[in-house]
Length: 121
Image 1 (cartoon, one colour):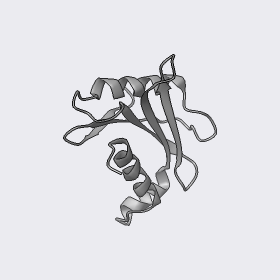
Image 2: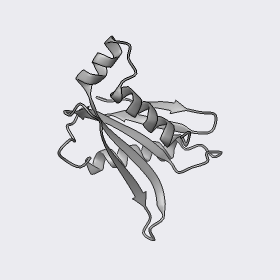
Image 3: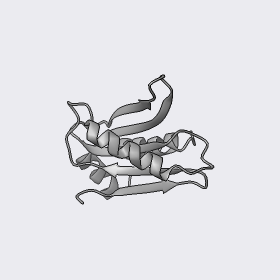
């Protein structure tokens, strides 16, 4: 398998995180990747969880500011069943933040999306 799903969790929620090595900056995120993340979101959903099943998809971005897409999965009658947060991150910017031990734009965006998905903000 060329990518691995990670999970962040609180006592009530688990957030699967999948990393892709595809450039989605100029394209919408591929359906196959949305389906895969949606499956992860449902597989890791805890019975005591407060919210919808959610997953985070990270992919390399070419812009210095992270790009974000939020995809909602809906039933035939329009009910939201789950959400996938897709975040394009600049790998050079993230590496620079890590080297400088800095909580910069990319790091903040990733942490904020994790918190948002886990209903902590």
